Length: 358
Length: 224
Image (cartoon, rainbow over all chains, first blue to last red; front, side):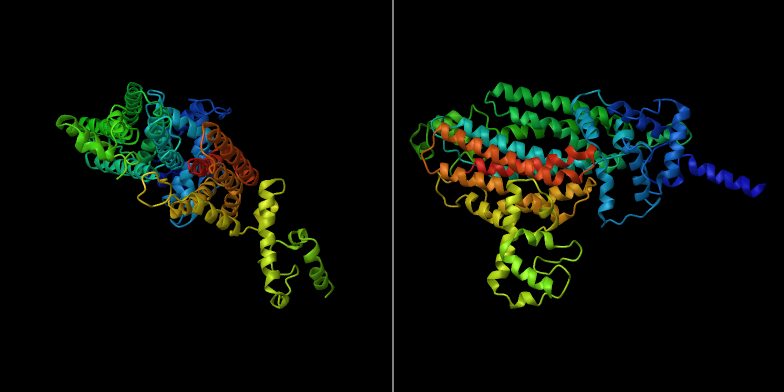
């Protein structure tokens, strides 16, 4: 009975969480898939009615059936739980089942494995602090990082800033002129800055997390798993992409020309999404040696981005009357102090395209 | 032989027969005959025939976009002539002047409109393919390009309105025209492309189409 016992043991090991799955950075632990299913189930509207959240026997049966079906490429039993099928997809991508080439479209489909309600959930989680569970980064985003949300949110943000910037500059000009100097350059500038923020910053953060890991006491086996956790690059890009979602309605509201309101909006939006960022990244920040430095860095980058948008694209209205009062060639006629002031404001306004003739 | 003679007669009288005669899988272009017989007869016909056949096919697609009831002609016999014509036309009208005149319209360059239309259509198509849609790349680009027709019509109307001195009322008229063009374009493309997505992801696939037409309608509206 030696051989059957060994086979049984091997089979059991196969079903108990999957050795190939452990190769991935964010593969689920055995309880994790139940947790991710649970959080997906609680978040989604019409989620799985058969599984009770937290019922260990049902979780175990579900895990075993899904990993049994996993690498064959069959859909998971419940089609409204795409998180679990992506579990297999990400396992497959790293060398479990089918080896997907980088040049096929199926390889990239695993990053778009989201449903409408999941995208809406993630957007809501990025705007409201404390809405996401404590293990959101690892279990929800880490399991199923999607690129749909970050990409389309950044594109929408670019165009909403460009369009609102043009509307704002139109409204700030003389009201009797209906000729509106459209400035298409705003799109290019907005696109560059947002693209850099949403891509370079997560890459920098990922590298910092990876190389500033606190040394772990390997004798403490329970802690090592979570203490050595660093988020994957895709998870960070996903988080950052969704965190920009709050600026879309804010950029539309920036059209209202009241300076106090604009700054209030900036501060509120930066505070909300900054808080969410820090709260979501806490499991990873805990493991880093420079956690305080990173927190300050993340928050200040976020605030600088928001303030930059406001100052660059939506002219601060107190600057405008000095400019509109005197046309550009009339500067030499003014006395010294107002001329210096006007020169400074003209330099600031010159930096803002679309408002000045060069 | 009989079938060849029939085709020769019918091609002048009932253009819709062109669509019916094509057999999926056997056709390559609009010029081949239905049974796969080598089409040496099209070498004999005058060039005007050949050109008119293609122009007729393009015209039929324009018609189907404006009255989106029957889907198959756009999806099955896709071509990119219509989108090219529309894109070139719109980019020519929309481009701002590059002179140093201070009152000049700092509108998009010709190339920028081109890039927005083509790269935009490609990105939207790629998005719906990545979400699991079962439509081919060029079919989707064809549909998105042809659905620019209402937007182009609203651009023509806006250009005509701009000939008069501008008032608030005229601006409001332009706004209404552009909005109608945008809504028509989105509805038409939804009719054509809506079926190719799984139902729980349909809003995810429709939103980029909406954004694409919104941006182009914005370019039309802000042109002056």
